[in-house]
Image 1 (tube, rainbow, N blue to C red):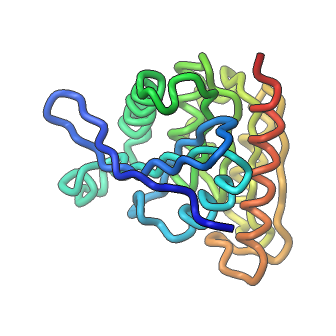
Image 2 (cartoon, rainbow, N blue to C red; image 1 turned 90 degrees about the vertical axis):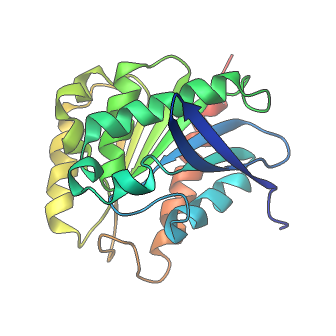
Length: 216
């Protein structure tokens, strides 16, 4: 299938400017914002792979650098979940004003530490957030916010990613929204094993489409 058109975008607030890539397939059914893990950004090959799979289901995607280059060099800010959630809420506000996406429901796809930021953002500002997906994520980093999340949440974790698997199981118990925990057999943290990232992408696509389809 032909790749969806992608547009370089810049989300600004005061002196802050965040670089992003907006993918716009035909027949838009929703838009998914990607929250990357530590040390990653809009060019993440794994998240770009998932984004293109979502686009084939009619989902727009926003791959966004949540930190500027200078901020990304500061490890404290890489793990500042409050800051990352603030940036996701900035992206949400931008999508709700952008003519190409303002009528679409929004979802979050969080990887690693980005999952904590996605869940915090979903809890802090739930309006128009239709679903959340975590890939090998650290939802435990949003622990105080987990009982307040209302968007249906899918946690995907590798069966061999033992420390993170335990963290996801504990976070799952704290979620009170509609939820599902998928354990990908044989997968480690980065889902590098054959077929495992494809499973993540398909599970995410089906989850988002299920809840975007419930929009009024």
